[in-house]
Length: 74
Image (cartoon, rainbow, N blue to C red):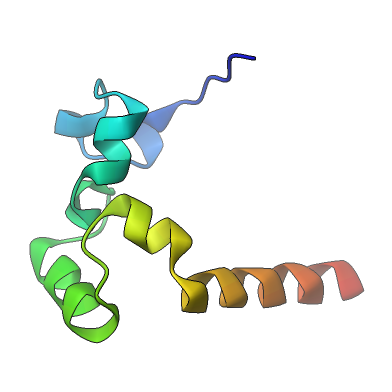
């Protein structure tokens, strides 16, 4: 199954034509709105260095799940 997404809204221009594997391995600074200093703080606080690390971080996943549950609870 093939999925498509418009990555121009979430990635800096230099990463928009990269493969998904390259994006997941890239620094979190590849995300639009995340600066190099933000990336350094995430690495220091949570050992998050890549987009993949951010997406699989247990604290961020728990917060996302809680927010989703709260939204569905009304």
